[in-house]
Length: 222
Image 1 (cartoon, helix red, strand yellow):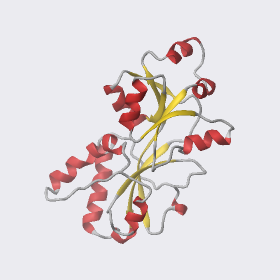
Image 2 (tube, helix red, strand yellow; image 1 turned 90 degrees about the vertical axis):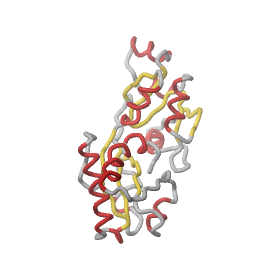
Image 3 (cartoon, one colour; image 1 turned 60 degrees about the vertical axis):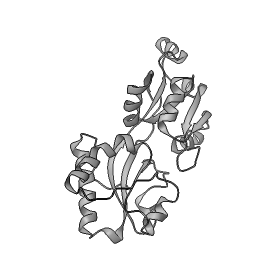
Image 4 (cartoon, helix red, strand yellow; image 1 turned 45 degrees about the horizontal axis):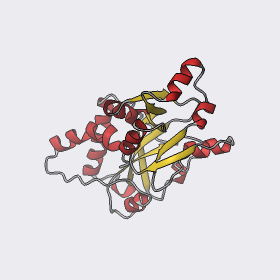
């Protein structure tokens, strides 16, 4: 699973799985650039990954690795976090919160699959803009902590931001420009489509997330 899913998703379904199948063995690993290969070769049974929904995305039905099936779990939007006494908060009380303000700040970034850029950076580059990424860290809690103790701004999914706000003295701001949503998706190999145990786990994960009140999206990602 991607690191943010441990906070936003696994609490929704792990109880149902363990209560109904107490002898099940659940071993989880962080999603990496090799995880698709591991799914294809039967090294892992499921993946939960986050993907940006934009026309240029490499993650689409036509571009998935051979044999990989998927189900959209829920969609999310990007937001921003800054420390509670960040100077930009005073600035935007007196004027609009704009792309220019956003780009003028230095940013903390979470590496995704070993990459320092993600879809937002490529989107901005197409418009001729670049963020000043001052610090990169390997996980979301690390980035939130850095954000709370510096003047750096952190851009992240809103579902994780709600958890960070409970732990750190941070203020949430909207992303000051239009950007496509992201999706968390459940992934598996087609060899397991008809396996009853595998089907049950898939259904339990999806139903549990739906019952938890997350914005469940049962249609496939395209």
